[in-house]
Length: 251
Image (cartoon, rainbow, N blue to C red; front, side, top):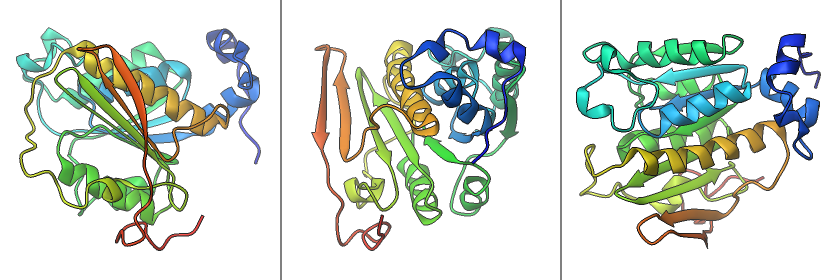
């Protein structure tokens, strides 16, 4: 595959990260050619989007409905007080374009569900799930597996965070871990912005590695951390042969 060349401005903007071992200019050109769907763009997804934009991922598709509220501002770093009451997707896109005008930012002012998720997944190379509700996360997982697109699922609660990488046919999917949506999970939960940003930064690096083809992705493992105890661990996970989503897929 031929990847687009970097302009002199891009060479300068990304110079320091192109010094990273095994990444280099080839990795940067791969990022420039790539596209990523992110649902949603709150404390987790917005920070993922920010890191991917500044790293030079060529095209970002952001999906999130609704207007910005004052109680979003402790964690949603792409937003500002002046945007309260306005569609958060507009604020996020504007800020990302300010950060890096060389990245294409497309917005979807709706949340993803079974009726629309397949359409948006088909338009990108990789999917990031940062949605708070399992019904949306599972819909994204199923669409990504069906279309054999990598998916990075990241979430947090209180001072804890979790992340898995789904590579269809090679790793467990979200349905393997959660055969049913947890019944007590709610959209609103305790959160510090720094905890959301932690899992988001790790997820962004995972996306960059997958797109650029370097490093070791988080395959067949669940990353879990607890910042109350400042502990991190990876837990081995396995595909379920009876998983209705990925059980019959081959690599």
